[in-house]
Image (cartoon, rainbow, N blue to C red; front, side, top):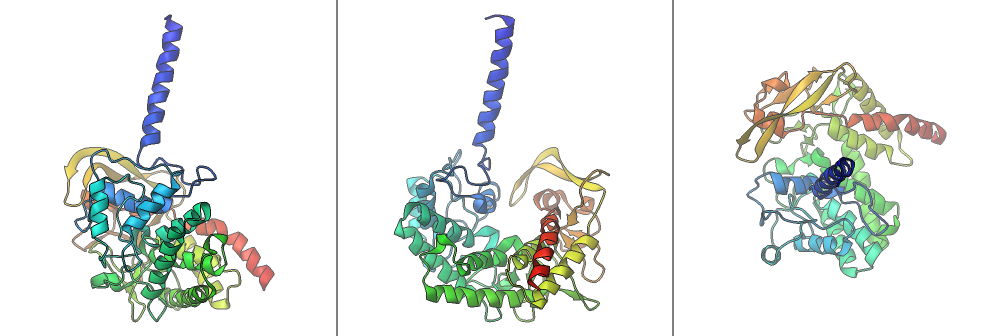
Length: 396
């Protein structure tokens, strides 16, 4: 082999190895449909990440070393996994990987643990499974998937409060689990599924008219709840907290570092949901416009968050090998802090001690590196807002 041939071989081999490693990474699957026989699996990413990377002692099973995953095209295998995790009450627990190829022992344990009330909408759980099963039924016509989806829909409807909100967990609502929860797309995720059902999406053809009517009522009550939760300061509506009181709708904290505040990420999901309503009333229109104004007023310019290598540290819930720092960058796009203080609207950060601080550098590394303190989520709402305004003007 001459020098030129050797060089070509080396380049090819390097490309092959890097491509193979990349394609086998845990979250390297396409975010959208891989082909006509695949279903989007990104709704499961958050739970899968927690299962693989975060110690959670509430889980029945933990990942095995080198646990393999199904490809997105393996719809039946993934859907059958989803059935294994569904509890008798119709809901799903959080923080498992729906794409994991389970061992016989893992399947046995799941089969014996169907009576758990640790069912939730947190981290995308339950509503993501219902969405997947509905699409799996469309592709396969396997009635088991439609039946399981219907049980999941019934679970979501039962979990709703009379005031229209959804708790983070159901039926176990102790502690902050009882609060109306927008964090991690909990309530908005449920409502998006109900909205799709109401709009008579083809994937939900198995839903009868009675259940569809229940979904319509639940969705409308949910919208009323969202409007009641919107934080008003100086007479003007702003945005929402990650969670709100299930009685008086006031902003509430959850974990010690999640204090009552105004939150851009969760609020963007709410605004996108409100903008998806075809014929919004005046209250909805005002809510969207007010939130968008807050998004614009709360943008932070000239910085970005950089992830850097750091010495390995094993914490109680996770292992860290990186750290995060805020870097000045005049070319960076606008960003939003995770939390803005009630009243002052100043960004703040917090450690597990529950004491707010004014910069990310003042947070201990465990939370600094293990939590998303800045985000770009509101930009999607801002991008879609002009087109929404044009539609609203035509309607009115």
